[in-house]
Length: 198
Image 1 (tube, one colour):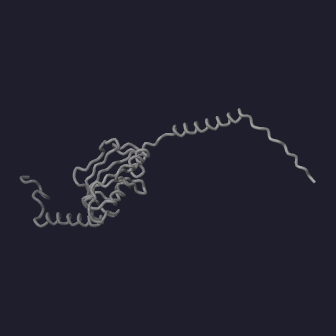
Image 2: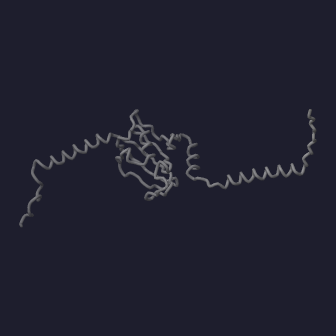
């Protein structure tokens, strides 16, 4: 048979408890200070704030857009299309880095990923504003007047779009018509012979 001997525990001194709580409080204050000293990413901060603005929608990829004018119809460009657009590209500080002077044909698959995704959202006649984060634009590389890691802000009006195949056929027909226009009357004056008087 065994007997259990009970040993009474000594009470913890009040001073030890005070030091323990002070240590925990100091550790928490230090953790908060370290968290606040962590570098703030200006891109993430800008996009988080912008996303809260009225009418701004964010896609799964992180592209943000706002519909200025809705356009009409259900048809939207695909990667196999060429879009005819008016556009202006700016940095977040308002600096314009590119602007179309007239309607510009752009192959949907031939632009930065964010611009391509944006075009695919638009019906004919629509005007949208897009905020393209760096990973959907030029990333960590500078491109002309665009600094590395820049958010690109575009105002885009989609006038029309056709497939690249249709565009090539139209270009071939135009070239054939131009060639035929020059052929029936013979070569233009002065072509193929010595200048007059020689």
